Amino acid sequence: MPSKADVKAWKAQLVAQAEQQILKLTDSDRFKQYLNTLAKFHHCSARNIDLIYAQNPQATQVAGFKQWQTAFNRTVNKGAKSIRIAAPIIKKLTPAEQKHLDTTDERAIVGYRYLPVFDVAQTSGEPVLSAKDFVKENLADHQNVTSLYNAFKDYLNQQTDLKVSEVPLASLNGAKGYFQPSTNEIVIGGDEPDNALKLKTLYHEYAHSQLHGLKSAFKDRPRAYQETQAEAVAYVAMQNIGVDTSNYSLGYVATWAKDKAVIHSALSEIQQVSNKVIELSDGLTK
Image (cartoon, rainbow, N blue to C red; front, side, top):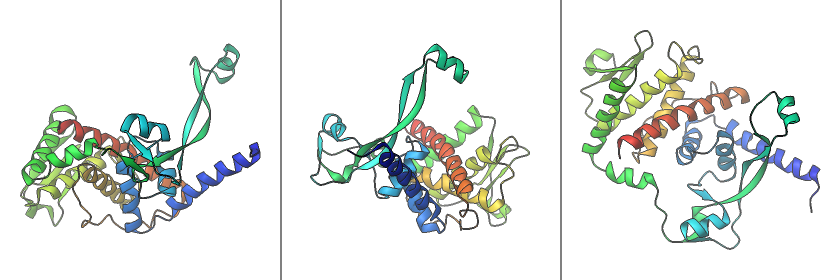
């Protein structure tokens, strides 16, 4: 039985390993691989996304040993090495603890334990379908990509304070679109012949509106930082609906990916907006 000190050291090593992996994201191919993980696990915490990526960047769907059996009718393959993720330890607070913590909450997170999970590739049994499979099938042809673009544009115009309009590409000086913070307006090149690119551009500019608008805490980020974040959100959103945009550059991220605090902040912001875009898109395609 390992000692408490051994367990603490192992946990610290696990988190440090994840941080080291993220800090290596200084080229677009590695960053793209991380974003693939982000798209697959958008309901996980940023901390667990980091842990999953560090231990198995190819993971697509994880669950516990028993959950694979009971929920998916699959079994974990013999000899499979588990992936460890963090789960909160929640405790009911006594009145004295509530007073000490200056809270009225009855329960609080007092720590974390690291639970073993396994990727679907480490299991055998019945096929596993996800919402993405159905969305991808629905968007398999050009017409349905166009439908999602129009639905997302209409949603932003009708349900948010953003205004989305289209202009000829010739008037954009080589750009595909832009976000104007002063008017809270997104402008898209309406005559772009590739409708998947139009949708990706709309995702990109929407990310700017959420991360870099006049009221955003991140509006003063350097331009290269902002462009990388917006492109990352667009890439994640397109991956979610099964449209491959790997031919589009994610930009050069080495300029801002060298500082641990900066990159974790950036990836956390990307995850927040990606979650929002994915939920909106999934809702619009139902």
